[in-house]
Length: 394
Ligand code: UDP
Image (cartoon, rainbow, N blue to C red; front, top):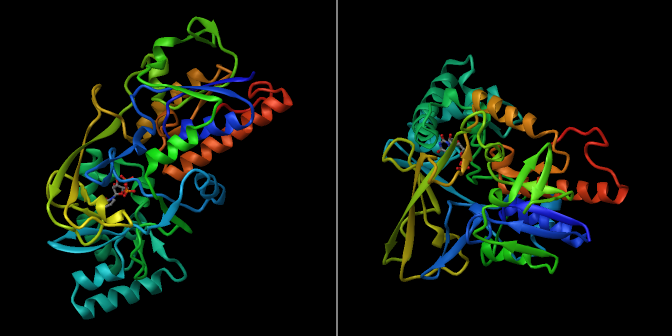
């Protein structure tokens, strides 16, 4: 039987595992932690579904991804709303017309909204970086204000660097809205799995041709010699999909590739609800970036208690879990060095946030995993490999 090896039982590894298994592969998944799901793992605490590794809100414009995930769980509609603490007032994030109304006197607010609509006709949002480039005095002032009160402090806390050192795509994820649309995301599909991500991923992995080994550090069993992969001392010729930190495959020979990590504190409260919305961002106060009240996502809310989760960004030392690649020019160059060094290994495929060093959302991760698995199935059927086809390694 065709064999595939997948390192990492997170959302990307398990998506690929499922598709390969459905097409006749025998898939072995090696997972370092003692649970499935990677950073989308969630669990119940006193009846509240807690996202152990921070808020994961599912949204996508990829029909194929929406269809795929719904094979494994019931989903219910959920549109994420976020408020930001700006000068002591809670305003919608992404910053929108309502945020302007709350923060500025009525006449000033009216003028600002008018200027924005004139300057950016027919668009629903602009990034803060675009806004800062505006030649119009009023808009420039607003841009500076939003940059200062919404982006600067949050980004410093989140990344440990000022916004100008980060790739502009990072802040571009949260635009400035030129309307009263107060949803955090605008994707067509915005729904959450009824019983959480852990259940969803368990179902996805529930195939008799998938076996998962937990608490297994794959790098103890994998060796790479002369661009061949050996598993437990034996040459492994099937596809090896690696979803861990790329530099670990090369023993960090070019140096550390930096990541940002997170620390969470949970606070139980004996009331039904504390926050007006699930998430509140604190760009300008405290050392945490945001608080999440997951109780409010659940369709049946508890009435006797709720839980607040405080999120503190921290440097990613050896002991910490990597959450985010830090997208700077320098780090991207270092990543490319590792990627080039691994390129000659013809049956190695890099997948997901850590192996690709990309700030992917869940749906993109799933799409990449689906695309890769489909490509491997196609190559298997046609009897060719990526090297024979002269393809760029991913
Ligand atoms: N951001 C910000 N202020 C906010 C929200 C986001 O400055 O109130 C910036 C910050 O740099 C953050 C990035 O936008 O890291 C992306 O935010 P997102 O909410 O997408 O982060 P995630 O949920 O992925 O941690």
